[in-house]
Image 1: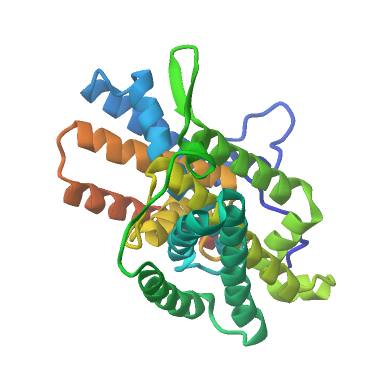
Image 2: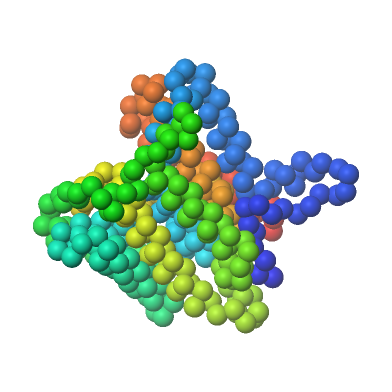
Amino acid sequence: MSTGAPATDLTATPPAAGRFNVGTLLREPLVGPLVALVIAIVIFSAISDSFLNPQNVSLILQQSVVVGILAVGQTLIILTSGIDLSIGAVAVFGTIVMAQSAGAYGPVVALGSTLLVCVLFGAINGGLVTTLRLPPFIVTLGTFTAILAGTRLLAGSETYRVEKGPLTFLGTSFRIGSFSTTFGVVTMLLVYLGMWYALSQTAWGKHIYAVGGNPQAADLLGIKSGRVLLSVYIATGVIAAIAAWAALGRIPNADPNAYQNANLETITAVVIGGTSLFGGRGGVVGTLVGTLIVGVLRNGLTQAGVDSLYQNIATGILVIVAVAVDQFARRRSQ
């Protein structure tokens, strides 16, 4: 029976005093992804002399910003043993709302409107899951289809250019010594840091792990599972709004056809990062590592001259391996 204690990224069952317990270490969800990331970096560094150049490292981080932020929300959903197929579509809808509102009412109203709309979508998803007790996969598949169509109707299948200013601020670059990065990268890291704290240091985070690990036990402990789930979907809406802002920083065009694969890419990052699809195990630190693995893999294969179709095949295989490892670890723990 679950006690509600989070299986966070940074905690582990302590080994016996004075002994290094390799078995315990290998059971940690974060170890595998970290090893995979290091191996990928070593391989691509050997293949390309420019792979570890500061400019290329910065490029990998910048290319990971939007999906990386969205993957934080996806982590929350998967920790509750759900899945969100609509999170990318919500963010794209947010970019259209932001661009249109900015032209009519200014950037402050645009940001506020985007936040409101994205939170509303999150609340709708959460409400359908908790009130009607529908499977999250079915709910978010339905809202994904509706939001995707709504985005194109709202945009009239047109792309809206956003003027340089507050809405593109997260794309502004700055230097730390010889290393150049953007405020979007900083924002992504702050989102991860904030959510790591929320999951590992607050009662809300412990309740998320409890509900995802064993909802029946969570109910017996007095945890309001419905409220927890609804709050998770609302938080995911907030994260989607931040991702929409970051997207306009990356490319100052609100395109209704952008980030078509973001939903699947976020799931990929979360699963590769060691979060269990069965809920209650993993966390955002692993998701950050998973996001970086995907970024490193795509960048390294591109530098090696590998076609993007083969890159997708490699990523798909990696996901299958990650899920297989998760299944194996889950059976061993039972």
